[in-house]
Image (cartoon, rainbow, N blue to C red; front, side):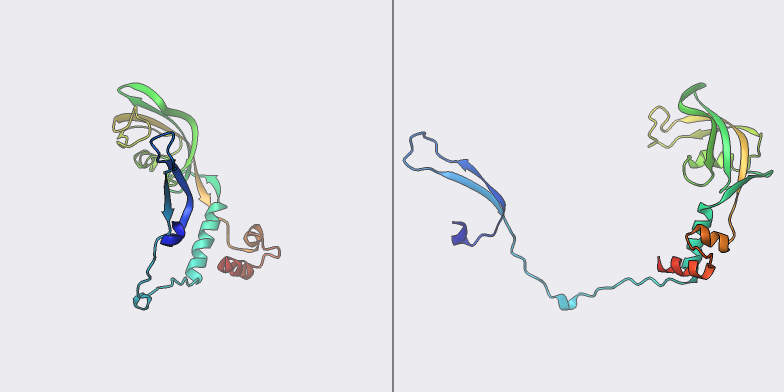
Length: 197
């Protein structure tokens, strides 16, 4: 029947008996199967394909160098207000209706401001603080916050900024090139390899 109808069967058919009587003179069955569809191609002459082309120039190389420098930053203590990009060490305690809640407190917590590891409102409260300063503020957790106990609720946080460090980026020199795997420290060769990558 498959050959007669010229079906192109996809996969393995499933069979089910169709006889109602046990002593039937003939055997009936039902076969269920999928077939490949008939595909008719449209007029491809009307289709335009735009191939994206990336031009790698000095701007793209500089962006990559900036990322590589940030990844290799060293941090030094600073005596100024905290800014985005700084590394801070904090203690914090959160209270919901005057009571501490799970996950709402930590001591000696390190984070880099602006890396997205903390809620934006929480980070905003740290920006502008100086080492040794304590601050209490209210904030409302997002309604879709994973912690269901505090999702959508207003809480009070007290933060102590223990330590503030600012990033010092390495210079783009032969030592930097060597750190990126260019044995002779050739900066031009390093930039060529970045462009090729």
